Amino acid sequence: MKREIGISLYPDHSDAEKDREYIQKAADLGYSRIFMSMLEVTEGKEKVAEKFKGIIAFAKAQGFETILDIAPSIFDELQISYDDLSFFAELGADGIRLDEGFDGNKESMLSFNPFGLAIELNMSNNVAYLENILSYEANRPFIYGCHNFYPQKGSALPYDFFISCSQRFKRQGIKTAAFITSHQGTLGPWDVNDGLPTLEMHRELPIDLQARHMFATGLIDCVIIGNAYASDEELEKVAAVNRYKLSLTIDFEKDTSELEKLIVADPAHFRRGDISAEAVRSTMPRVKYKNENNPPHDNQFEFQIGDVVIGNDDFGKYKNEMQIVLTPHSDPRKNLVGKIPQEEHILLKFLRPWSKFQLVSEN
Image (cartoon, rainbow, N blue to C red; front, side, top):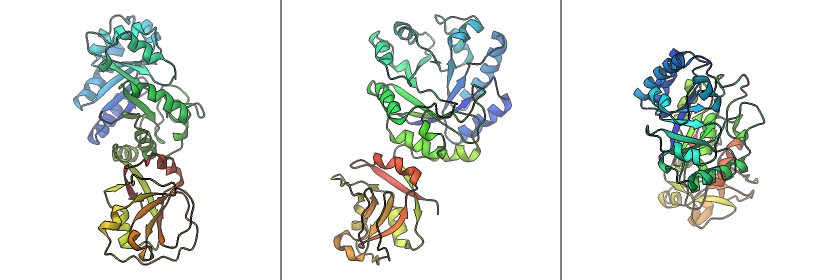
């Protein structure tokens, strides 16, 4: 399934022109999904329709899929019924997200709506909600899943719970989404905004690392920036994330040679299939650069988790093999060439047997 990136909009708290500028910036960078909140509408049906129809039409012209986040109160406010979703179709929406659920049969019936609207479910509860809906023979291609976001610091999902919730949807082949947070955005649905991540561990992390981590789990098809407006730099960083191959940052040591930097930058790294607990071994560089000399560094110390090392001239046939350290150890036949930042160590567990990966330098 295609891995997408998205943005969020809050038309009841934002300026329409700024929304359009934000959409255009995101479109130019390859974003394709919009989470649009309707939880706070207080104006009449006509004004709401005019506001949302305009911004959705603009987004659609830029190639975006728009999912509207709704709650039962919206139906009372706008005097519409769950049995007739024509209002949302007339707005130009591609789907609606049910912030609250029903009995399973209701959601199943909604998935057969005549307008082809996707019905997106809340993924952040580890109960048999999805299985119940599917047991009523729901229209699977029109059932999506999307996690919640959490404006209050300390209230977002713990990692293990997030994985369990996500696996329920992924096992059923349902399209999934989750939120990461901008550190510049101040707009959300409520008056508390300590960021809008799905995972609590992401709240203070760099935005591109949040995205890389989400995609690395293999459980999330679309990563959405939860708050608005992300800065231009943040939008660009998320857009630059390789969604299909794990990417890790490396901070080079001062004495790293040009050959060693060339080995690190090789685009074809993969973890050897017969893995070891001591290190992630990328063995092809020792074949590719077997005739290149690599003198030992002065490194009589213990390598630590996340260190990147390369076999030197004293390492025989293993010369120029690149490794990422997983267990602290010492070996003078290996040169320390760089370190993966501590905050990115959460990605190391995703370097499975045969995993393809790349190392990107920022220095």
